[in-house]
Length: 158
Image (cartoon, rainbow, N blue to C red):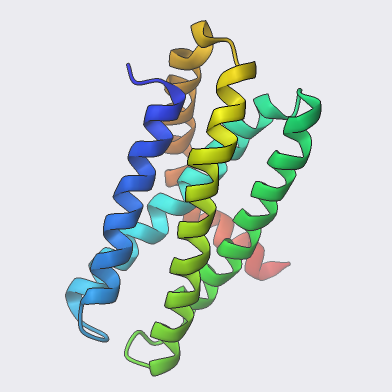
């Protein structure tokens, strides 16, 4: 079983690949739409699982509270862009412009997680717990994936 850091990093690598594929495909193409849908669902479930299984652990540490709040805030900003993009016409020039902002922000976020936050978390999260947290993350992500659409509909009602 991969540990929590390996699981999250594996998702990040997959997301980087999808971001590149999305940008490299023609506007409004079927390939872009498929890559976008894969990215959209995976990132939304990843972020929710990360907040519940990884950041919740960091909140118990004084230094971790600010780091976790900062990352959760970035998740919310990216979620807003994800929803905006999901509602836009992919063939519109504005779609690609908004997507590039999302890509820039997301890549900055995951780079920050992998360098700064992971390094600090490795110091305070008991190594014996890393595998269990990795399994918890994957279980939670799977559950979150099943309810992404429901959560999006609920947000629209608010």
